Amino acid sequence: MKPAVHFVGFRGEEYWSAVRVWGKPGFIHVGNDNRMRREMADGDVVIYANGCEARPSDRNFSDLKPQDRENGV
Image 1: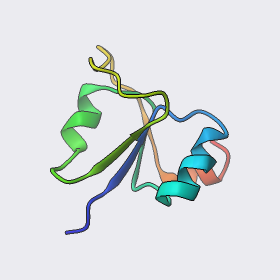
Image 2: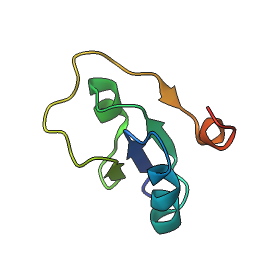
Image 3: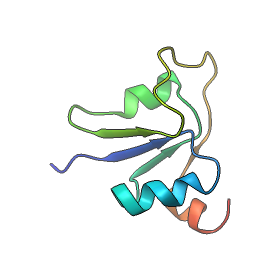
C-alpha cells in the first residue's frame, strides 16, 4: 500500500509551497490532535506547517478534504 501524505496546520500560502514539494495530500489536518495521530499508519508521511508539535492538542480539530482547500475553504 502506498503511504499517505498528511498536511498538518497549514493555513495559507505555505500550503501551495508544500504541494509543490510533496504533491497534493491525502489528508489535511487543521491541527495536531489525537484523532490525527490515530489516522496515521506506519510509513505515512506527515508534513507540519510550523514544525512538529510534541504534544497533541487536548481538543480535536475538524479535518479538511483536499478538494476543500482547492475550493478556498
